[in-house]
Amino acid sequence: MSIATHFAAAIKQALKARGHTYAWLAAKLALSESSVKRLLSRGGISLERLDAICEALELETDDLLELARIQDDGSRELTFEQEQALAENAALLVVFYMLLNGWTTERVAKDCSLGEAELTRILTRLDRLKLIVLLPGNRFRLRVTKDHVWRPNGPLRRRYRAQALRDFVTSPFSGDGEHLRFEVGLLGQSGLAQLKKRIDRLVQEFNQLTDLDARVPPHVAKRQITLVLAFRPWDFTRVVQTHEVQIGPPPGPRNKKAPA
Image 1 (cartoon, one colour):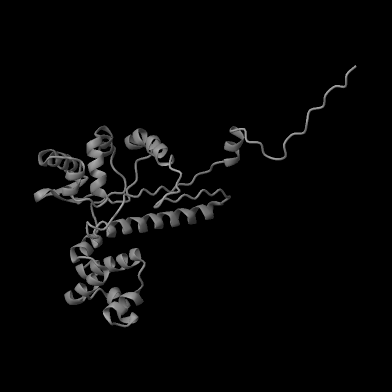
Image 2 (cartoon, helix red, strand yellow):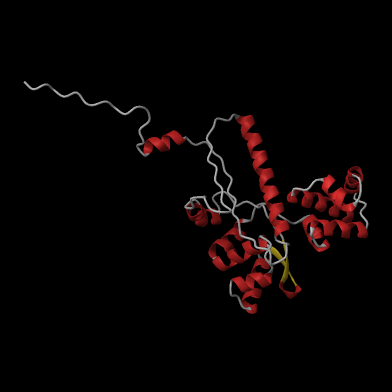
């Protein structure tokens, strides 16, 4: 895939994540919508046009290139050894997930109160684990995809899943930036397959949004958001009955024996 095609793919991704349409970009560039569609489908984008698109999207060209980069060595599942190392070292795990979510090494060092030597040591360990590629000046490139999944019954799940979920669900989900929906229904295999596809698509869009928002100026307020999506066969009525909640009309008064 050519560099121009990479940029075209990144522009489409940025438009979708920002909620903009081809018509919106066409208006910004003083072009017709059909011209923008041809431009992005063929990938023939001049440097001048690319600068104008980046200005409209409030992105740097380096940001677009990073968004478009295909991680040929990226994996969606960590190896057992990688997970074991992260599960055994809290500092390593925290730094890795900060980097995975778009934090710079400078911000990681500041927020975690890490000296340069300690930061370099952690980054070197992540490089040896093949989770990142460590570059000069403590810069880095990720070697795993952002939407990677924890291994089923692997070291990270065994150590952190119960604790993380328990801490997550204690919120009443009534504040700003919080939202909870709880739905129960019946689905067949076809419906389950469609549901999985839509959840995977939502996760992809969530990661695109976080990639873009990680690149907005530092003075713009941002908060770390956690998204949990899951489904499984589960009987809610059994939980209700377990907690002894009466379903149906209350029982009538007991018959008393008449006095002899």
